[in-house]
Image (cartoon, rainbow, N blue to C red):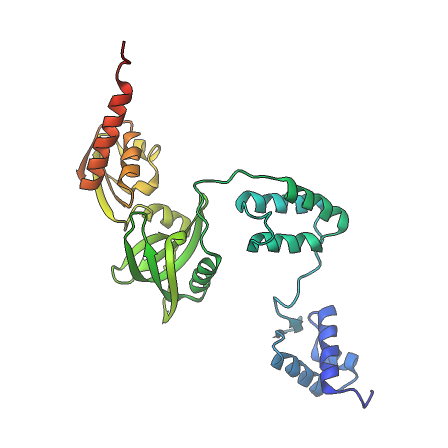
Length: 321
């Protein structure tokens, strides 16, 4: 044992050993360092004080290992795997070729870490591909999205500033249950505290988010995707109620669930209850219903339906001689 080796130097040596031998026990670490087991534990403490995540796992297969986030494992992608990953990123994020974009910058780091032959192919695809943007997609601010994801994970209540498509603005306290991506749009599935009701908010329309001290417990049987589909048509600016002369089963096959909930009035009549921030879009969706219907509640949607009907009638007129 060298008497001139400082505690810091031995701690750094311990870090090197932990990187190369995850799961090493205290006695084996002490043996490699040439010190007592007590001293080895002290060097682990020095690493932890320096902010290096060293985890201790108990049991017959336990030992010390470095926590996640200290360094990436070696990248061993095949050419097909690397190209598939680049293509998936380009398909989902159309600024991935821009090195000033956060995703583009991250993708560049990944490509640079690949073996040269694989990296050359991946970079060629990245440089020459020009994907057509999905105009229906609406990507949120990354910081807003990550804050909400962490709040969901930590089960912390949030205060959300929101602006609807119609221009209405409000602030709501909510229990964030899940973040769900659906057809290129990001949604926050949550419980509105004031209304004690399930809500689904588009994250790209969230103007501000503050994480509060209050905690919550999500429903035990929560299915985020199914519940999002069920509540996409609730909580918006304009309420709508429609009676349709068709059974529920027939309408479920042709109506998007974003319009609201379907319930049977009788064997041949269905009630549709929902809400919207875009009455014209809602009226256009109703125009595709393959049955007669009546808008019994929702003056805004009713006015939009008249405009849509006038446009359709004008299109169906005989051309002038």
